[in-house]
Image 1 (cartoon, rainbow, N blue to C red):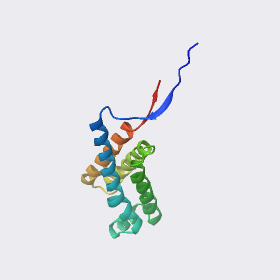
Image 2: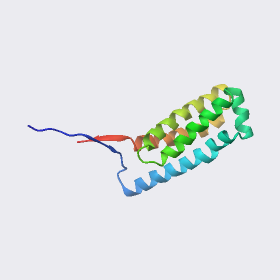
Image 3: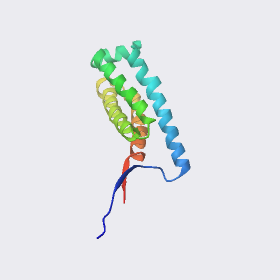
Image 4: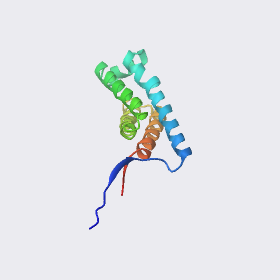
Length: 132
C-alpha cells in the first residue's frame, strides 16, 4: 500500500537570478506602497484628503491607507507575500475603476494598472504550491 503525502510550500522561481529579481520587485513595490500610497493617506496629506472627500471621506481614506500599509509589509514577509500581492492587485482594480469611471482620468489609470500587474506577478510567483 502506497500513500502520497502532499505538502504546501512557498513557490520559488526557477533560478537564483529569478528569485533575486522577484525579491527586488517585492521590496520596491512594498516601498512604493508604503511611501507614496499608505503614508500620505494615513497622515492626511492634502491631496489624499481632497481625493477621498469625493469618494467616501476620512474613514475610507484611512481604511485604504491601512490596507496599503498591510500590503506593503506583507510583500516582504515570505509567508504573506502571495496574499499581499493578491490583495494589492484587487485594490488596484478598484483604484483603476475610480480613476476611469469616477474621476474620468484614464491616463492616471496607467499607474494603477501597472502596480496591479506587478503585484499580480508577485502573487502568482509566490503562491503556495502542492508538491508530492
